[in-house]
Structures are given as C-alpha cells and as structure tokens.
Amino acid sequence: MSSRRVRLGYKPTAAACTYTYETPNLWHIIPQSIPIALMQSQNNVAAYLEAPRASPLVVKTAPNPAPPSPTQVVIKAHSIAINPLDFIIQQTGMIVPEDAYPFILGNDIAGEVTAVGSRVDKVKPGDRVIACAENGCFQLLNTVDQSLLAVLPDNVTYTHGSVLPLALCTAAVMLFQDDTLALDLPKIDPVSNGKVVLAWGGGSALGSCGIQMLKAAGYEVAAVAGPRNLQYCRDLGADYVYDYRSTEVTNNIVAELKGKDFAGIFCPIMSADAISICTQIAAQLGDSQRNKVVATSLAHAMPYQGELPEGVKVTYCKFMLLIYSRLWLLTVYRLGR
Image (cartoon, rainbow, N blue to C red; front, top):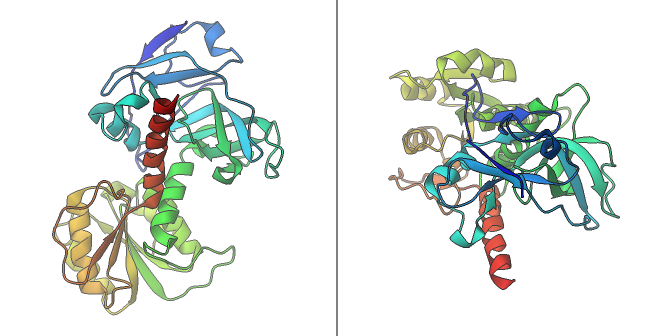
C-alpha cells in the first residue's frame, strides 16, 4: 500500500477562518514526494488521522466509493477547505470515538461530479459543485447527498467555492432555525423589515456568510470585527461596524442601537469571552425572550459555562450536532461489523 505523511498546516487570511488547498488532482497538503501515479490514479486516495492527536496525517490509497444511492452524488475533489474544527479534532483527540480511527477529517469540498444516483435531478456528471461531505472530505472521491450540494458558477474557482458549504450551513442554522434566532428567511428581492441584528465576528468565514444572508433577509446588520476587517464588513453590507478591540465597544454598540427594533445576536466566535460580552449586550438591547438571544456556533456537547444575565438565552448549533452524530454513527457501524 502506498502511503506518505503530511502535516495539517494553517496560513491565516485577512478575513476568514477557513483555508484551502488545491491541485488539479488532490491538494497541496500532499507533499511533492508522493508518487505521481498515486496522485493521478482514478482510485481513491485519503489523508487519514490514524489515532487521537496523531500528526502528521497519513496519505494513502483508500476504498473507492460504493455506487451512489438514488439521491447521492460522487464528487472528485479539486479543492478542500480546512476548518478550525479539523484542527481541534486533530490536536485534542476530542469528538472522534477511539473506535472510529483511522479517521478522515473534513467537511468542505469543491469538485467535479463523476456519478449520480437514479433520483438525482440537481446535477449531472461533469458539473462543478460545492458540497458538505458526509464521510470526511480529505479524500479524492467523496459521496454526498444531493441536498448538501450546489452547482458552482463558472466564474468562481474551486478554491473560493470550497470555503462556503460548512460556513454557509452553520450560519444559516444559527440565524433561521426555530430554536435559534428564528429570523425571516432570505429572499431574492429583499425588503427592509426595520430590524437590526448584531453579528459578533463579522470578518470570520461564518460571519461573512451571516452578514450577507441577513441583508438578503431584510435586516440591518451591526458587525463587530477587527480593525482590518471593518471595511470588509461594510463591503458585505453591514450598516454599522465596531472594532472589538476598543475598550468602549460594548458602550458604543448599546448607545447606537438602543431604541432600534433589535432581533438578537449572531455570534460565530466560539470564545467564552466573546459570548459573555454578547450576553451582556443582549440584556441591554433585548426586551423579550424572543430577542434576548445569543446564537452561537457551539454544539450542545460544548455548552457555554458562563453566567447569563436574567432573561438571556444562549442557543447551540444543531448542524454541528449532525457532524458529531456522523462520528458516533461511524463508530456504531464499525463495532457492528
């Protein structure tokens, strides 16, 4: 079996927490020493996390996908995105049960459709797509349900497209599900509803998606970000911007937004300090259980431990729960074989 080792590396960008790797056949996380024959093979290749906290990943041949079920699609990867969740899993050993190793990380993929199930009507072989991978995307061939993919426009590169799926899905769950902020859904021709949402972490990958969806849903957006990303947030549509590093950021937000029709806080930053500040702001700007809400990207398994002001609620992201459920289902499957 051919195999090579690879380190999972990060190079921060100005306005996103998601980093991508792209080659015509696989990714730049695969070293040049890997045989060209392996890279160009029509068989599957994967980067495995072989044990808890293992580093580097091991790249080797992997089982080819089974024929897609009626609603599934097989995608050949051209670009994948690495999310903070992947780094957390690799470095801490948390979330993935021991019986699930060797494990394939990753959720975001951009590539070309190679096979479709009998009831797939959204795409056909040869289409360029982005998708949320169901079984880890650090591999050449990925199988996903058609409900978790979208056609990638020709003017968007695979690299740019691959950063969208997980961030977009997570932000949408935080904003629009009934048990989170339960906001109005986006429309093609949005009409202002006069309400404002605070987005703490507007310059992040989740924040970038959230700002644009909020504007498409008719909301005003007050974005909190680092100084270098304030103009970026304005360019995305934010109506108000605040530097989170300012010692007066809380007072400035409350002073400017007090009296407006407040709809809650979207906080994709997992920091306990950020969530704590958001709960204090929600207590001052909200006037009911419906808008004294801080929607976080935390899963239910990672609850916020800080104190909450009276009447303020912190919500959790079910999409992250679905990702964790995949890991446990994989374990159950392996134990039953």
